[in-house]
Amino acid sequence: MEIMADEDASETLKPLVFRLHENAPAIIREVLLERGWTEFDRKEQDDTDWNLYWRNSPFPMTDHHSIKPWQRLNHYPEAVRITRKDYLARHLKRMKGAYGSTLYEFSPVAFIMPNDYVKFIAEYSKERQSVGRPSYWISKPVHLSRGRGIFIFEDIKDLAYHCRVIVQKYISNPLLISGYKLDLRLYVCVTSFCPLTIYTYEEGLVRFATEKFDLSSLDNVYAHLTNTSINKYGASYKTYKEGVGRGCKWTFSKFRSYLRIFGVDDMLLWQKMNNIVILTLLAVTPLPEASNCFELFGFDILIDDKFKPWLLEVNYNPAMSLDCSIDDTVKRKLLNDIVELLNYKQVDTHRQNEMPGSKTVRRQVPWRRTGQSTPEEAPGLLPGREVSTRTSASQTQPALKSARGSIRKVSAPIRKTAKAQPRKTLTSQLREKMNMPKASSQVKTEAKNKQVPAVQSPFISAQLSRWSPSPEFCNYKLSTRPYFLTDKDRLEGLAGHFNERSLLSVS
Image (cartoon, rainbow, N blue to C red; front, side, top):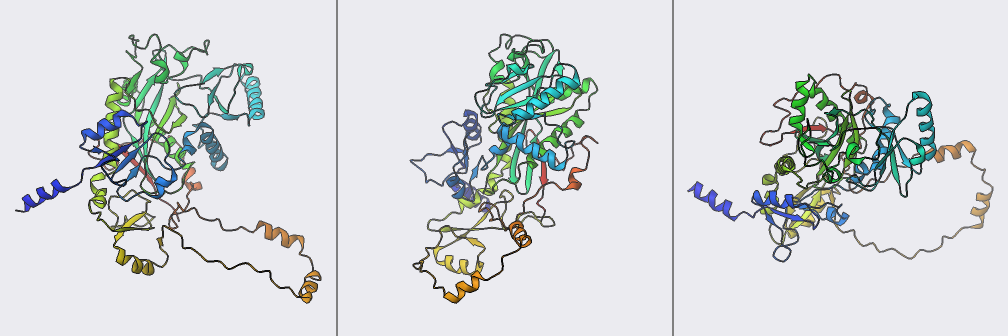
């Protein structure tokens, strides 16, 4: 009888619902439909009756304000801090100044044009005089993607731009396989920025140029750029290339097997790339706190001939188009694992228990601070998020009174203000004011330097502190030992095996 009751209950559960923006990739729909989800229909369903909303562009802040406990958005507000090329360069430069260039030496020297033109001229002249050989630079428009507008130059006379661009030192000694240049697309999922919780995906893409590397032909994009959106139009894209094969992509697993054949420590290289991911995300934390979001980043990393990884850029919306069978294999498993990572089966209990006529009261709670465990009253929610409690309309007022300010009200109370009247000032008071001695310069300086407490953003919980790497954190040397996966680090049940890096907030 109990088994029959469980079966009846499972049949009455609402199916998980996904909502896609018009520009969302088609593979998202395919994966979710294969998993038994249903697509949101505005005509048939309530506006809040969905679990996942996926779009390529940022969400309006109204969507972040009205998010429900069972819903997830695939973007954080202001994630562009790390994905726009000039913003990323500015943040990494700031971290270099704060913690030393050694820690952030994985980022090539970069200049934002036209602001840094004078600094670039000085660095360019210094390179020409000290090195005694040609120095190569690459120019990228800050707001474009897929290799558009990129060019490489040696002579400063060739530098021309009509918009804001970033000029980086070009890595002229890349790792080559059979003469072909390559870079790595590393997928990183962030489920919280406070505390910073990072999941790096073990499988990824190795992208090749379709013509052999040659510094004497800097204008040949098929030899110097590895973007698939460019190389798929190359003449040798579909032909068999020695050592690479057809197309222009490998998987991480194939690349790491290739390195092991030549005695390269692939685990050490993997650890170096993990360090790059962590240090890069630390440069932009914390972002404005928002409820129930996650972010999928695409880190583009270049390996040089000494097996040193270099961060090229971070992509806001890593491409989910299926250009070849390798894309289908990697990206389909990636999306399935992200859905598993978000733990929808447990989170959706909030939507299943939603009753008509109930009201939502949002309450800020501390989450995973140092020395504390995960709160039991919020199972399945992403860390650092607002937890919602359901109360009926009759219980709302007592709940507000007992909370004593810990509950955030949706609408601000209307305040009646009296008409402002001019204050009466006696003549004796004016005389006294005129005869008062002037404040000394020291008093003025102290008053000027007095720090006024900053007004806290409404998106940052009062219990969660802003965190930046301490000197002790930054004093360790990169690449001191390889990282070996353990059963604890590897998350079971995920096809590509996400690995978690969680940095707790420090109060």
